[in-house]
Image 1 (cartoon, each protein chain N blue to C red):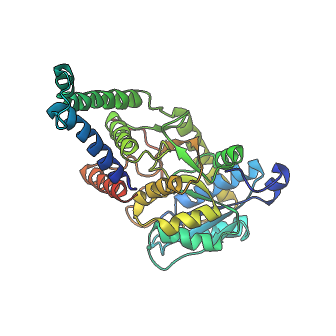
Image 2: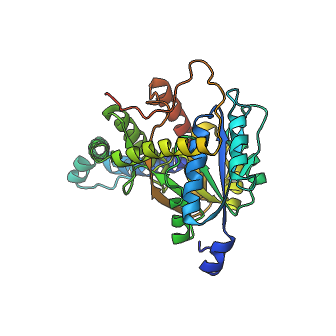
Image 3: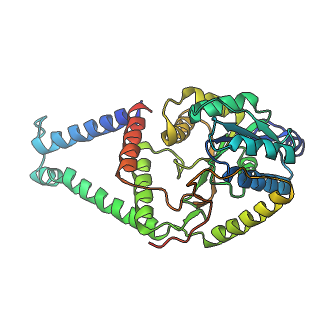
Length: 247
Length: 109
């Protein structure tokens, strides 16, 4: 689907990227992410805004966000907090309502590498959706042991066989969407948590949207290693089978 | 059609074709070689798929990139960010008890 924004030059002037940051207890990460975003967007010259959606974090994340707003300006950092932890899907809906950009960028709290690769790729192919992947190009991970790599690749293989999603990495959440595409998808998706992220891409393909990919380096920053224990695997399989049966 | 239905449809079609040939359901009087060939096909295909899966996953695990440079760069940027933010006046409220600090630890395993 070719971009409808017309001439590339004038298009660049009017493209604006709204970054949605749903946060819960991210008072240490948030300043770092915002700093990195400001740095990369500043270097790239793209027009942007950052929307912090804090779900009533008890650790003072909102206060940090307010300080960041003073430092970087209320036109660049928007605060749209909510009273309590309400989930990712509704955070996106809430964020979209306040987004003034025509593109929306979603990212996990601990992944903020080179955000400018997303708009770049989108412009390259006029994609409706651009997704970060750890599995292609020079994408990858840091500090993962063999067990974790095996589980990750194994789970991804099963996902590819069962869902044939047309994207190499479904569970990542470093993505760029055209705003109207994100609105449509959030409307349609019913899962929770990271299965919701998977469902978004599967439905995007079904609805005929084009998906581009950029390689990302996934570096765990805060929690040493996330536990990939039996519970996580079981809930992943449950989510996968649900998507298999319903999409 | 959901993926599940696609798979069920595909499996039924293949199953019917297999049953037809193996058990000669339409009384086609096919030469015995066909029946001998068709009979173990399901198991054979499963084994082939199993081997393909193992080989593919094994290859992908072996070629899974380790981003040393990205990690180093990120650590350096975190330092830079903290200093810059302090300069700009960011004040961190006192830490709640037992909260882990964002340090990129080298993994041991």
